[in-house]
Amino acid sequence: MSSAIDLHGQPHVDRYLETDGEDGYHWRNGTTILILFTKGRKSGQERRHALIFREHEGAYLVVASKGGTDAPPAWFVNLQADPNVEVQIKGERFKAFARVATPDEKPAMWAKMAEVWPDYDEYQKKTSREIPVVVLERA
Image (cartoon, rainbow, N blue to C red; front, side):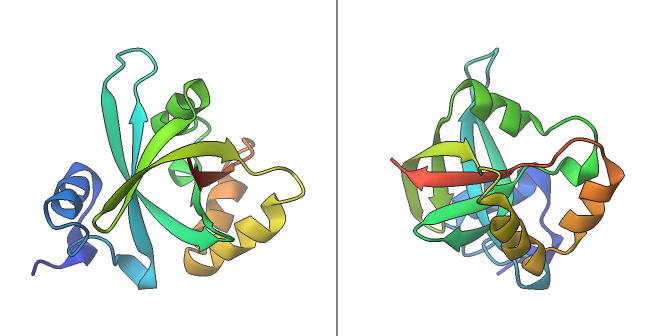
């Protein structure tokens, strides 16, 4: 089994999908990874992204941080155009609906995500963009 810690970007996605998450589900600092499938808003092509997630009240949370850059990640822009996405967790792939956490929901959800990846707090300090928490609900 290869070391999941060394996986990033497309190689991470590929290895995760090849092994049903055996390699790539467990990542750095105790985080877990899902694969988010979106549709390119211009190309219509399937896009695949490995993202840190946490389960929350039957849904799954991810953060559209892009390391604190002023521009949101492409996957977030794509799901804003089409919130009907697919998610793979380990060997299970399912349809989901993506939405941005409401102002009332976000503080608790943000805290839950920052608990496993404290860099999210640093990312928010680097940008004036409000970094959204995305809620993925099974369709």
